[in-house]
Amino acid sequence: MAATAAEHVLARTAANRGRVAICLTGGSSPRQLYQLLATESYRNRLPWHRVHWFVGDERFVSADDPLHNMAMARAAFLDRCAPAANIHPIPTADIDPADPDRAAALYQQELQSFYGADTLDSARPLFDLVLMGVGPDGHAASLFPGYPALDETAAWVVGVPRANVAPFVPRVTLTLPVLASCHEMLFEVAGVDKRAILARVFAGEDLPANRAHSAGQTIWLVDRAAMPENVGGR
Ligand code: 6PG
Image (cartoon, rainbow, N blue to C red; front, side):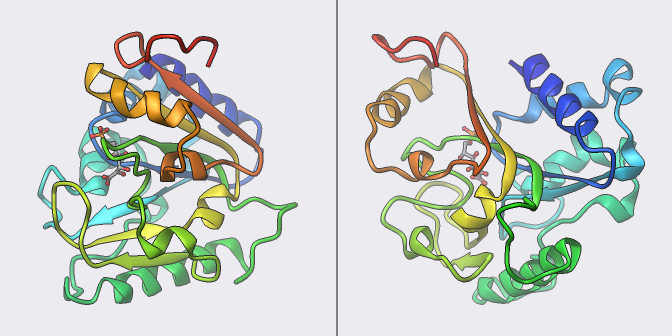
């Protein structure tokens, strides 16, 4: 699965001759992909100087905590491969966790300045590729079932005062329209623990993971262990 996902990273990068924007995800699912990108065969095939790395959500944990999404990506590959100026973390470090909206506002500014506008043009997606995972409650990024952040259409990034699953710390998340502004959204879901939630997702239940989709292509990579019975072909 990691190798397939890595081929998607290469293909999306090759499809854009200019500045490429990739939105990473947290959790354990993408770790192998990140480690693979740092290996010689992939490392030599990526034009690192023109690829920019963002993250779809962040947790208010310290920057050296393995649960910090961007820290995990940095340790797995970015710090060895990407120019520092191309790494765009959500600035949680110097912000009061009681005010996650402040970090959200700063990241929104950063995204808008990178994009060059404060409204999204459907003809010009923000991201080339958005990576996603699915949580046990059907969340994607830090958009949890029933939370108001799910219905946000104006803000690009919002604070989430308390998560629905561990770690129960405040979060910052990109909103659905911003995550949708991409050529491709790629979900990676692996392991038997994901089978129950995937059955609900694939049954079409109204869960964040079903509301998250690209304005371009949405692709699900699911391993055999996670695949619910009676679902084929996805
Ligand atoms: C987060 C993630 C989140 C993640 C899922 C799956 O910060 O929590 O970005 O959306 O993708 O929770 O996580 P696992 O890969 O650890 O199962």
